[in-house]
Image 1 (cartoon, rainbow, N blue to C red):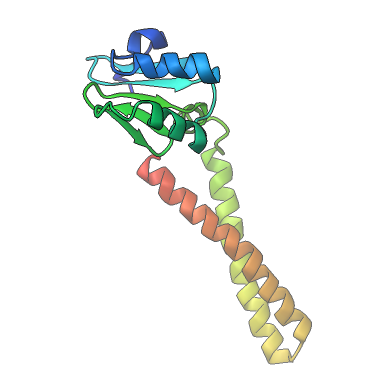
Image 2 (cartoon, rainbow, N blue to C red; image 1 turned 180 degrees about the horizontal axis):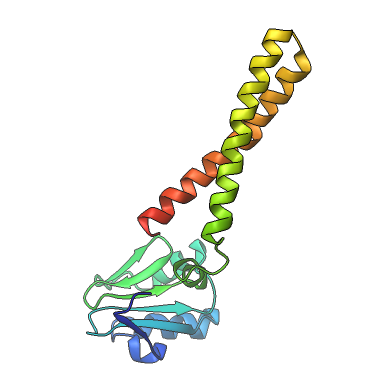
Length: 165
């Protein structure tokens, strides 16, 4: 959420095109609005639902509102193209607002430790080859596999953080 948004009541954020969709979700699937964010200039809004949108549920809603060209069914969201109103899962709110994210200090510490232990794995393989010790080679391979995977995941998370997703 940026400084150009404000929290509001989700009923106020719905456009007339998405009201029947919300009514259908409430009556048939017990899905209601949970929270909402809207642009200060009222160019767009996001309504977060109290449940996650399963692919089966999106297919049912898509079949029900197939004649509405202004309603778009994207991956994990239902969007009104005319008014820029989005219905999103509860999971998206947690993701967008950074709930359960790791702090930057612990993230960098884990990433640097993974890098250090991966380099240590290469060093263990080098020493194991010079001494002919298969145990050191095996430990080095395990270090590279385990901590190299962890390092790769940390790099992927770092790229996501830098992109702001």
